[in-house]
Structures are given as C-alpha cells and as structure tokens.
Length: 158
Image (tube, rainbow, N blue to C red; front, side, top):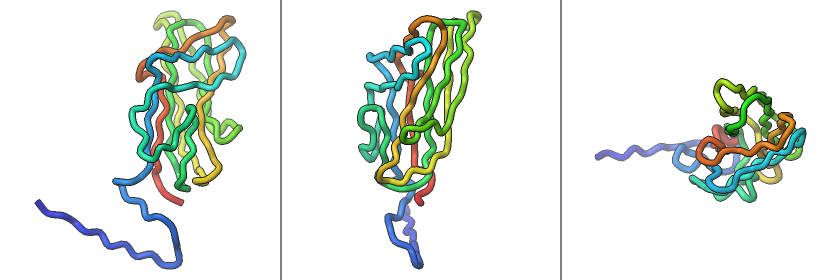
C-alpha cells in the first residue's frame, strides 16, 4: 500500500484548507414526523432523522455552515395525494433562492418533487432551509422515508 502526500502552497491567503475528506456534508430525512402542508400556506419542511452531518451544522431542520463557500443544496418532497401542484423552495436566510413546481397527477397517485441549487453561504450567519406551498384545496401530508429529504455538501470553499 502506498500513501500519497499532497503539498499545498498558498500565497496571500488565510483560512482552512479543505480536502475531499473534510468538506462539510449533511443528509436528513423524515422517518416518523410527516409535515402537514396547509392549503395555500407556506410551510417549513422538518426532518427528524439524521443520515449524517459531518460538521454538526443542521439544527431544527436549518443548515448553518461554519465554513464559507459554495454549497450544493438538494431537497425532495413526496406526497401521496394526486391532482394538485406544489412549490418546493430552498430559502437562504429568509428569502427564496431556488424553486421548483411539481404537478402531482391522478395517474401516478402523487409523486415526488425535487429542488437543487449551488448557493454561496458566508460560513457565519447564512442559513438554508426548505419550504413548500401547495394549493390542492385541502391539507396535504409529506411521505416519510428517504423520499422527503434535505442534503448538501461544500463544493468549493470561498
């Protein structure tokens, strides 16, 4: 077995050197705590199960990294009811930064919508969370399991 050594030289910069083995990453999903989505109401999606969180950067379903940089953020939502539309949003702080719209159809008895974005987060005060909005006429409930999820990884430090 051989071991490779990497020499890194930096001129005029300070901070933490990130290598693939220590970049913050997280994955959360729902196992028993569904989220109820009221009709025509913006609702924060909550996650009750941690798959992993390498930097302990998620609290109360809000991601707040301690390393500034560009993060790939992904989320998915699954709902069993058919014939309605649902927005899924990534919020940075208190504003929508990415969105998708999924139309759930009767022929597939619901489905899954996903949203994804590459987002700059300052490593101190910026946060990300996931919200949904639906207008089916009645309250809807997310499905539990890996189909309703929230994950992210640092792609490049600032």
